Image (cartoon, rainbow, N blue to C red; front, side, top):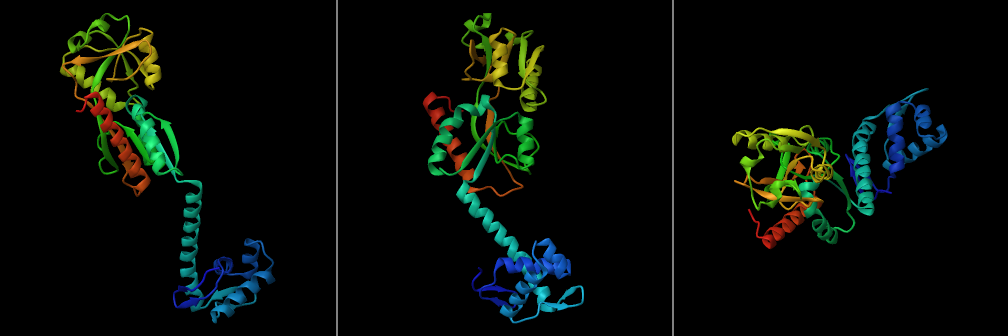
Length: 314
């Protein structure tokens, strides 16, 4: 029931949504018979409901012909306002169900950059929003870009993309120093810092240029600025496959300092390349929710604590 509702010039003390749905069907079909078929009712049953609505409102909503019905001025008003009312009612139902089920938070992230931060940030976030349903997706840059654009992801945690300031809002989470991952038995593993000049001619293992274009551009720029020759020995879709290739001795790879790889070590470079900015991105084409803001704040808090404890604040 809807109590004490004003629609247009009507005061509706107790109109039912079902009556309004039946009226709209008749108005849109222009026929009681066609509306009854559409609403899976008998014609007499639908006629009684509309007649009851007219008596309750104290107006005629239709002029009736032999095989059709036409709206009166009062009926035209109820048609326009009634559609808006049903749309609002549907939104309320969706909001109530979302509250009961738990609002979703769909996160896309790059494991090599965001992985270490997510665990503690999500633990703290869930204490504030225990009913939120978190969905994590290990994604490439291209997949995250598409996910935000298509509305399949709510937040992404990665390196910001160029040229999208009008569509994505970025919040810096932290800055990662870049280092070189090398096999444990590699000749360079004995060095505390690896001179960039010593990378000339080394076999490079890189993230895929299609999936991680920003990473590829940064590495290419580093080699060009230092006059080095790059020998790309393989491209990989993520940190797991990249780390396995390093451990197998197939080459060396640029990763964030602190990245943990099996049977490999990570060493800083000298001179150090520019740090990589890790940020949380949300789409500017949709409203940013309080839930998203809280999650981003927790990410920033965890990153700040980690940097303070390691003395690696940049």
